[in-house]
Image 1 (cartoon, rainbow, N blue to C red):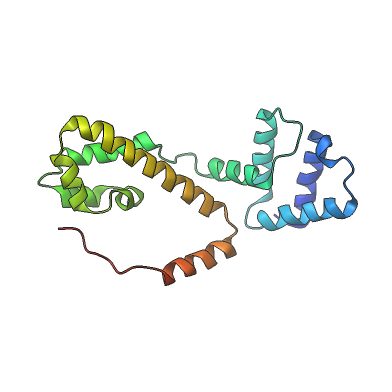
Image 2 (image 1 turned 90 degrees about the horizontal axis):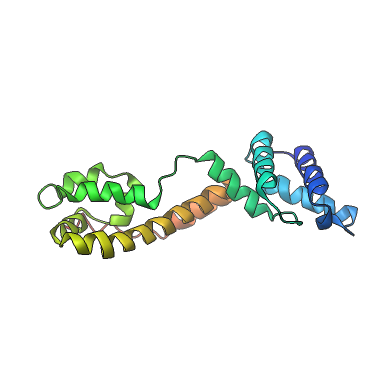
Length: 184
């Protein structure tokens, strides 16, 4: 989205949220346009507009949302098929059925995000060897919290402008730890 398109969005927001713009100078409104253009520079105008319209359709607040609220809504709209924590647990639960002897194969079948949370094939085996009541309460609860935190972190990362994501990826690559193996 460019500055002209950002100005169109801010105009719509001014109409819908007049209290947010009372007493604002032209310089401050220009700065707001520049901020929105910068934050949404990698996004198509129509996508940002749709996110703004979706937000305004459900919002009863008198004040304009922060840019992050619209960015979060945009990310959610762009990734509607994101797995819930219960759906992710379903993959783990299914893998546990063959987790004592086939733990390595079952681990490899898991989606990458779930593998990162489980950690190692050996972890699957350990969970498979536990009594089912403990697995379906304590282990499931811990996994679901970890998955929800990971999903939120990934949504926040996706929301970043591409140049910021690139810098963070480079920093993370420099901090990478050597692999510990598969835990066998």
